[in-house]
Amino acid sequence: MARARRARGTNILMPKNKRTSSPQSIFVTRTAPEESGTKSFLKNYKWAAAFMLFIVVGAFGAALKYLDDTAKTDRKLPAKDRSLLSSVNPFMPAAVLPTPSPTPQLSKEYIYAGSRLLAVEDKNANAAPPTDLAVWRPSNGGWYVLGGTGSQQTITTGWGTNGDKAVPGDYDGDGKTDFSVFRPTDNKWYIVKTTTNTSYSVTFGEDGDKPAQADYDGDGRTDAAVYRPSTNVWYVQGTTNGFYYSTWGQAADVPVPADYDGDGRADIAIWRPGTSTFYSVNSTNSNWQTPAMGLAGEAVSADYDGDGKTDFAVFGASTGTWKVLQSTTGTFNTTTGWGTTDDMPVPNDYDGDSRADLAVWRPGNGTWYIKQSATNTIRQTLWGEANDFPVPALYRR
Image (tube, rainbow, N blue to C red; front, side):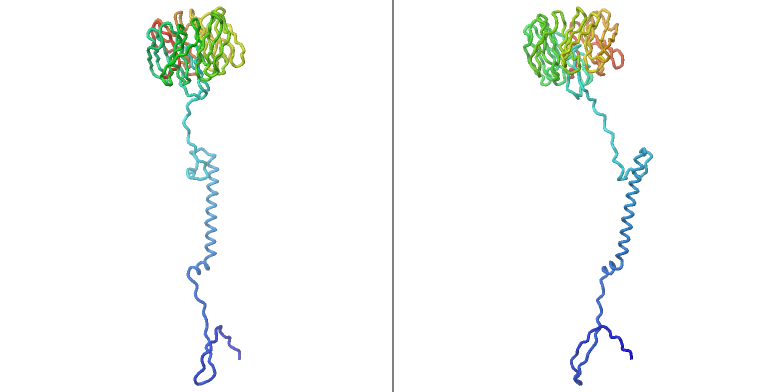
């Protein structure tokens, strides 16, 4: 007979039967314990989970690629034609918000009183143009300023008297013109600083000297200076370079210091009425400039073409003629019929276009007549009275 396969198990010996002496054996079959539910799930579905993870990662990658491709297309299109997703697409560059227009920065700011350069403000100074009409009244020492943009009307009395000479300038370098006078009787300069509203005096010069204050060292502060006709010597008290003197001119010459070479420093210069010729020495290289103007009259040098260089110019009161040698072209520009014999020329930048305007002040009626270069229009303003002295500059009180 075929032998039966024996089940796997264990033979357990039992005690001998009381009736027989032979031992008995009992066969016990063992069964493996059942697995837990979690282990069973992982064992049976691990491949399915791996497959699902693969699908999710693949879909995410495909979505990122789609967004990237869409962003590349949208970047080439105007904003109105882009897809709806462009506003939330992480691959689109961040929107650049428009920045406000910056305050105009000035490379140089020239401060004049009439035709005299008072100071050159620092580069990038945000300064208002020198539009202030102003007069000085020796009878009461009053300074009357009709403020323009960035300024206001100012009336200061008791600063100066008959016999004094008005010498306004920015002596403390704050960008505002200071009220100041030169008194030949005691050879002193009396100055009111706008920074502290305090006054001080400087002894400099002597009776017979002609004030020639200007910014000779280019530090933004007006330097006290005089021209002595008796010896043809210039004396300058520089705020940065200190005291120095130079011989230049003749007895009948008129001092007209200004920045003729455009280096930010006033040049020593004179106007010789007898020959209608200017003589200046460039502070940059010590070269001379000696233009013959061919017109008798009063020197009215200023920057008429806005290139940062003072232009040699003459005003012939008898015909109201202005003759300007433009530094930009080297040619003359002549205007006639602007002013009369009794008018006082007061060229300055009254409209803020960085070009000096042809202007006169008429003592007979206290009126300013300004030919504005920005718009080629006429400005006519009543400010001042007989016996006043016009001192237009950038006061900004």
